[in-house]
Image (cartoon, rainbow, N blue to C red; front, side, top):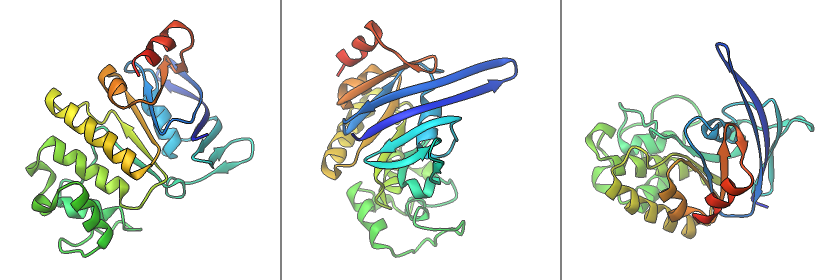
Length: 232
């Protein structure tokens, strides 16, 4: 089983209480967590990555136990070796694309130099066809090129799984389909498990081998779940 997830978390904002109770298991190499805004998708992804700590539960991905409240297992984000690509890509504006990718190779906060030499960085720059613009800054390149840079940075340390937060939301419609195709081909070539969250049915159709439908903090069963699966 690639994905074996049980998570609970109570989130309070002012007088509002949101209870997240997410449970799913899947052997799909491309899994989509689908649901409307506010369903708890991003919080779930952050708990998988170790950025947010659940109240209780279990996170087992690709046969590795990353979190188990009962057994008191709680690996750090670095120990989990999961690549996380944020919705806004979270590139450093003062670093070139090459430096952004190389930053993931650093253990501290010291910025890599503009002329850094690293075979792994070069490999992913070439894989995403970024050679001609590797010295550019994020504001100087297109949305698609920023996304490729974020993916290269996520993959440069050979993670065990790839987590994507609404990766196409900021792109225009014509570019979305092209990058969906590229992502599907990349995942198939690398054979790396991928979990993507989205509210867009087109993402589900293009990428999902299996889909988990989330609404109001819980996995939906019954007709709504069947409708989500029918998109695949």
